[in-house]
Structure formats: structure tokens, C-alpha cells
Length: 382
Image (cartoon, rainbow, N blue to C red; front, side):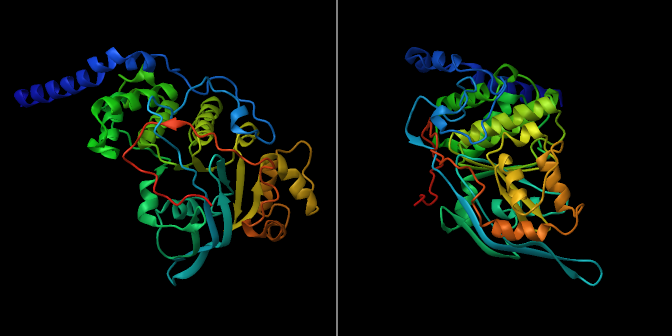
């Protein structure tokens, strides 16, 4: 057994040395120096977002870090808009298998370049909606799911999207760099050279602030660092669409803010970022571009955080000055103030209305990225 253990150790040591060693050809071309000059942190400075986010060319800087930029400006992140119409989903529960409606003819549109939060009380249908849109629930629902206004082809869509679960399963005995290496091999394979994959891994680790922890075992990382590593493992093949199930769950306020800042940066690079969130603070809420609020399987609000109060005022519901608008909206969703949800569903046309979305048209801030074997073969937006 000792001989086997020694052999395994030598293999791991050899792999680790291969990851750490800079190829001579890259040193001669100066590639290694360029990688070293990239910022090593992301989102450490306070991010002050205006009520209506400006065009991306004027968006607040996060230190210049990017998860998408590369030396080879071969292509751009392809914008992907996800739409859904009359989406319904029901399950049968109990001894008599009575039907229970989880989603009821709900509609909506999640755009490229925006950070979208699906929020609502427990049991409202947030996770179910996320699972259906991500393709994890691919049967027993009715309605349409559109990708850039064309019918979704599920097999193709799954190749172009990533789903980061609430409980991320990291291999505890691998270092950060080793985990990135295996993820790159699984997602990209042999289509890119080892040198190109190493450049990509280093860029991602620099951008998300894990470069100095690349030799740390994943079991020794903090909660926030594990969240960032889970994201890094999924963006190694640069998917244009990313789904997150409660990404701030279990994190303190400061770490939650940094996590949302990272999601914001991913969206600012042209991706469609969709996440569920439970009871966000007012600070976090204002960082999202789009709030999609669900109650009893229907949409009661779709728009920006700044538009919650004007929206409620138009249906003769006044939010108290000392109240958080999002908390007040969730209390309405749980019928704390009587049966008001039906009025809100009618006002939003069950998600069809875009009157309370961002007033300024978004111009996607498309950064050049390394040529990838994972081609963005989703339909182009019209």
C-alpha cells in the first residue's frame, strides 16, 4: 500500500508542477508577464449603483478585473435573452394525489447584461421557475420558453448555460488550482492547448480574487471563497447564461455584498445572470438590475427596486416611509394586508408588463474573450 501511495503522490506532484511551471514559449512572448499584471481582486471597493444603471461604458469600475478578457480577442459573449409565456407547473401531493399549482400562467423576460433576482416568500415558486428555465425540470410544465425569441432547444441550451447550486460540492482534498484544472479538462477537453487553458484559469482566478489562494485546499476556504470558486469552476468555458440558487445563503452581509458584486460583474460582461434570493437587504436589493417577484406562482412585480414604491402607489397601496419596500412587498405577498396580490398580478399582467423595468436601454458591454471550443450556437437576437 505504501508503494501505491507514493506513486499517487508523485503523480499529483508532477501535475502540480505542470500547473505552476510557465511554458518557455509564453515567457518569450511576454504572456506570463501580462497575466501577472492582471488585478487580483474583484469587488473589494464599495459599488455605488445609480437608480437606473447607465450604459456599460460608464458603469462603475471594479478595478479593471474581468472574467472574460483575454489576449486573443477572437469573439464576443453572445447576448442571450430568455423569455417565457404562460408558464404553468403543478404537482400531485398527499394520499389522494391532489393537484397543487406551483406556477400559474406566469410570464417574463430576463435580458442579457442584467443581473436578475427572482424573489418571493417561501413556497412561492422561485426555485421551480429557476429549475424550469435552466432545464433541470424539463417535463410536466406547460407554456413557452424562448431564447432570443425562438423556441428553446434544450440540449443546445444546456451546453450554453451553467447552474450553480446553493450547496456546492467541492472536492475537499484538491487545491483551488487543481480543481480549476479538472474543470477545464472536463468542460473544454483537448480543444484548447494546456498553455491556453492555463492562461484562462489564471485570468479567472485573478478576476475573482482567488489567485493568492490557488495552492489552498478547497476544504480550507471560507464560505465566500467557496462561493467564488464554485462560480470560477462554471465560467471556465464562458457560458453566456448563468443560474444561481440563493448565492448569498449562509453568508454575512459583507461577503454577500462581494458575492453580488461578482455577479454584477459577470452580467456587465454581457451575460444573462439569474438568481433566486431570499429576504435580501436593502443594500443588496439596489444592486440588482431587475427584480422579479413571485407570489403563489404568479408575478406581482417586475422592475427595478426604485420602482417598487411608485408601482404600489398606482394600485393605492402606500409603503410606510420607515419600511423597506422589498420587505413590504413580500408582506403583501403573504397576505399580511389582505388579498392584495390579485391587484398586483393584474397590474403586471402576470409578468408581461415592462413599464417598471430599466428606463435606459442597455448597451451590452461585450468584452473580448479567448477563442473557445464551446461555440455560442444559440439563436442571435433579432
